[in-house]
Length: 438
Image 1 (tube, rainbow, N blue to C red):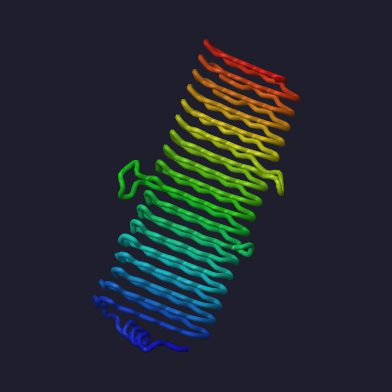
Image 2: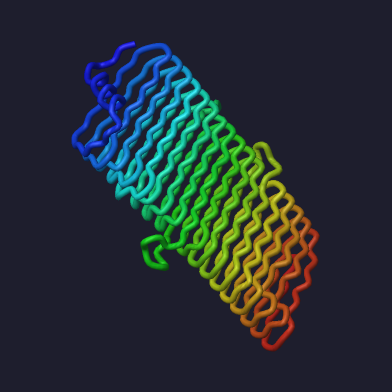
């Protein structure tokens, strides 16, 4: 086992005295080559510009750096192989702290905590190249905090947590390439204008971002949180969340296999976008408040039996665009507010829809092209609604809307096969048009 002379001097100075002194420009280096290894560096109490570097190569590993009550501190841990476990604690007024843990292989486990009255610009990075992995970063009380976890395969898992940190950025990259169990998870609490991103490329996937803001230091109406999830293959499942805030953006992109996605946003002016491509799709979007927008695009086949969606937006001025292409389709929606708009397009296979906007001035546009069709539509209980249903071929059947309303327009076009309809409006100045067999 080899140590640099400077490291030995630093270790002696740290561990043979309990008296704390203020000091600046401290540097600690530890370099170890093989077997049981274990290294600890502690720098603390009212000091500036500290650097701690630990480099270990092989076997039972374990490295720890603690920097407390320091300014502009930097910690680096690099471990090469075997049982690994790296920990960096930077806490109690550590302004501009940065921490990096880089592990190449074997059992891994890396934790970085930057906590308690931290200043601006805290940055933490964990990179794990392979094997059992598990990376975790916790940051609080530090605006513009930045955390990144990179995992390149095997059992993965990761978590990045930010609290009381406005304009925080948290990113998890899991590039399993077919060998990763993946997982993900980002939680940002009382962190306005926070951005959370999860990228997963292969295998077990899963991912979760939950951002719950209560206007930390910024004024009301300045939330603007962003959640982005990208999954490119295997068992997928995503989920976002975002609560007590306005002007949230949530985007989920899934490309292949079991899919499922789920977003939920509570507040006004939210935007939710879900893109799913092949295999078993599903979606669910649920936004509370007014002026929300939801976009869901599903494609499917290859493995087949995909599609679903379900939407639900509570409030006025909401808009939903739902697009399904092939397999067992279904759609639903429901919006409950004046001035809502919904557009549903289903192309082929089992179809079935149902949309509803329960107030005045709403617009429903539903297009079904082929196979088993069915419909329902909406514009119930309000005036000046516009409902349009187009079914091109196969099973058809509709039932349109404008119930208990005045000045509403209902138009149904059924071109071929089973047809059937039933268009309903009840009130003054309504207009119904039904065209069949054109």
